[in-house]
Image (cartoon, rainbow, N blue to C red):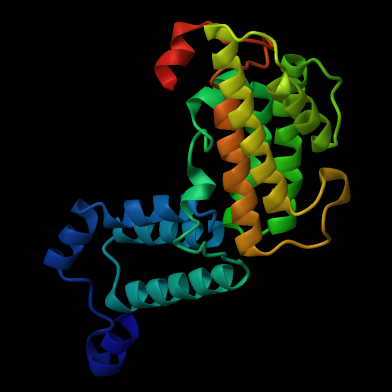
Length: 253
């Protein structure tokens, strides 16, 4: 706009900015808002130039001074932005980057030490860093599997078949089933099914993961791990390692 004015009305460039334009520029606060925006965006050179323009308007500058100042401002913004890199998240995965407690509040409460890796896994997925997503999901799974190990009375093992075999052994037991035992068996049966779903999504044991993962496979693994951990949070807690008695947890389900 400044350059256009200079081109069309060069004979008026030496004049002082008209009062109505001056008053509007000073009273609207547009310059200070723009300056503050440059500060937030860390465009320090543009912020410095904006401060010069604000100071310039305090002394009723000429049109030429304002036009030159605005041109310099544009150049500084362009130069600084040219040195920046911007990454746009895909709309279908953008929510994974900012969501709080991506596996739900009950998982966050029951497995607090997994919260960081769950959040990082979702951020990596949103950024298409699929191998990194798998890495963080593996770490989160370790927390849940440690709790499951206590429930089925086995030592923690990175091999998921250890848990599946022990759960199957419990499910095949012919011990008389009370109401509470039936409930426990239903929980373990569902845990087994969900763990098998995670294993199938992974298409291999956790100790022999593939070299690279694609978008679809990573999404399947992410959602399978989420379902598995949500189910475990119904009854298991990292702090207690056994049945969750808290009414707070029951209310979250």
